[in-house]
Amino acid sequence: MLTNKIVVVIATDAPIGVALNTAALLGVGLGHRHAETVGADTVDAGGNPHTGMSAYPIPVLKATPERLHELRAQAAARDDVIVHDMNQIAQQARTYEQFSDTLAGTKPEDVEYLGLAIHGPRQAVDSLTGALALYR
Image (cartoon, rainbow, N blue to C red; front, side):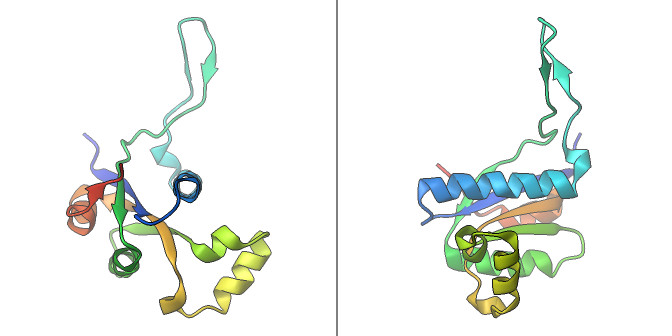
């Protein structure tokens, strides 16, 4: 049984292309930071290789931009979870350097979150996200 849990939370008002891009970028960050969440490569009956996928189910939830801000602050204040975020600054930047420089000059309260990925003990993640609806 998996003792940790991962959820992705997307802004309710994000256009579908932005929502999909946000989920993809959060997945890259999760896989990079939490290598143990990626299962081993596999092969099908024909011997064709398939790269490892997430060993965890990852529910995709939704929240208002205001709730994303609150949720990020709550998750970041906990020692038992790790929060990854995708924000408007990253979405609009042309280069990683531009993103980094712009973010460094932005007050925390002015960062507009498009999505979050939260990883940690199941009970902790559920306490943060249990009231959120599935993204549909």
